[in-house]
Length: 246
Ligand SMILES: *[C@@H]1O[C@H](CO)[C@@H](O)[C@H](O)[C@H]1NC(C)=O
Image (tube, rainbow, N blue to C red; front, side, top):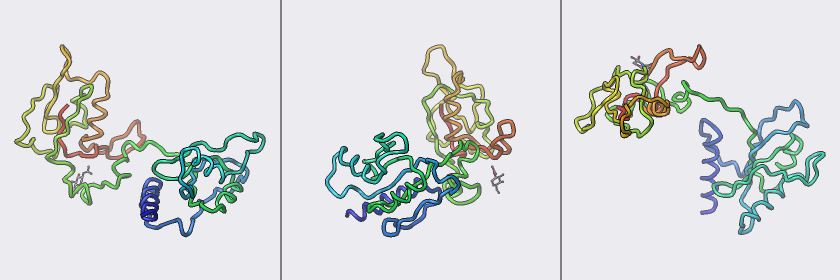
């Protein structure tokens, strides 16, 4: 059981840290991170996976187990705790700042599994569906018919109905089970329901939040979308074929 749990946690973490899952169990043959190798004295933040403590541990003992992997101090600030964060619930490991040389030493300690170097990630906006592996005309998106026939209901700040994300090209009529009504400046096969629960207020979205959430969930395809030329691509929600009721 314990080793099965270890494998599952390893796979989970691999799935988290790598866009494409790599099916291997790293505990037996630790794989070191790639190093930049330019300035060997520079500190980088790492998430270091280690085996669980070799004793029945409470939070304090986790802390001591993790600390036992680390050099006792950094140059010039002796005694300062090196742990940036301890992970104790889903996996055993910690975040810390290390130089390349220190990482080598940490990696030699028994119980070390793997280290992941910090990485800057960028907002993906237009490219999020692609990142998730959703492609027009193939795979999961095609098999799920882009969410056609699904009604996504949102309770939010309203909706800017005329936004091109809520155009209804390619969207069939709502299913017969739909009993709602639509009171917006534009209702169509995409935006099939709009209703305000706030007295004397219409369904327009002064705030912008409801427009954001509903287009993220079910915005239709917009080819050649960009923000002043940036993030150019085809924008869409994750279920571009679904209906929206705000
Ligand atoms: C998706 O593929 C179909 C069929 O090839 C094409 O007609 C349609 O324009 C494509 N839609 C987008 C948003 O690329």
